[in-house]
Length: 533
Image (cartoon, rainbow, N blue to C red):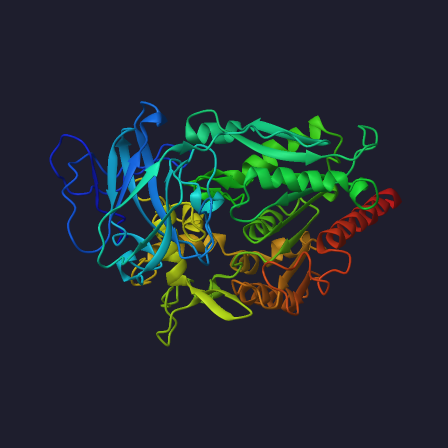
């Protein structure tokens, strides 16, 4: 059963009222918003709980506006210039609009689709409110970004359960600023034949690469391929590549090349896995992009000179790439990976034989999604509601996995793993997800893969990971130990999802520096063995 995202909305225009239609499917490569409403007459304001009336300023041009309309609110006492994405404290309501003309007004019901709860249930008080139109569905991944439309922050004192409508505006279009390569960093815009064939139109991917001075065709250097986590926008990639380039004055940084891969896609994160919905990303990387980079830059063109690392979604991706291409990469250093064992998928067993509910444990209590030193702060049900309000059925931390792992439904949209309301898991989808269960893949093919992965798997995770990812990581580590693998598994005491790279317990000289040195040592050891042969 599909979870419907049909919010009530009415526009100023000369037409009769009509029910809100269901969202329309769209290809993942498209940046066009999903249409889910049509113009209707704005009815007279009714007494009772508050509504938001959002007017698109006439200065925004003549083209109709479409996308996800959000109203964000905050009770912060200090005045804010803008309200933006904050999973822990942002409160918001949304709906989809289609073809809103500048100069027109739309009414949004903040109880129909809201997080953390309907706005009318909020206490009376002073609120800061802001309207935002997200035309490409990227808000949940990147916050406010280029081409979004936003309005001023308005401060009002009201009782949400008994108040007149609140008027807000959209009057500013966030400009697009062409990213500039920092000194020593090159952005490669690669048009992929595989992706272009998949989507039926020219499709590019990007990588930011930094190569140390002194590297030449005669003296190529090994390469570290780095994959960011969910929400790793390209400006972050560029900044990290620049930080590496500035460090290339001393070992180990000046002895390797660093290539930051762009995993961000409209569905969320490609995780560089081949998918019937998001495209053949694994093949793109190993068959097209890396061979292209190795021709363009002085990089070692052998498996022992290719290393891959990543954190969170990038941690899962880096491990997936090493396991599925054991002869192509020389090793992975994967940190805090997304669930690598579907027996413990954020606490639920989603393997085919299980009857676990995703949202509720066997004791009926909601499953925890996020925690910190204060305890559990967000349940799986909370994050499902948050991503539904902020992004609909794509672009969220859970829905992105469905876009990559799930079969495609008849409507062109991936089949959901679970019912958003009840938490019931689909048997059909669970069976399809098995091929992306890294533990299951290794267990079923260990005789073949085990020898090829010798010395190539290195896992690091915080023992108190913020998203409980240490549980699935530990299960995989236990399996590797039982098989006699030489894989290294490190559970960092006190480590969370966010302090692994700065926690002194994880790495006195910084975790990334320690991993890069290990890669370099492994490369040199392999080169010596090659010379002895």
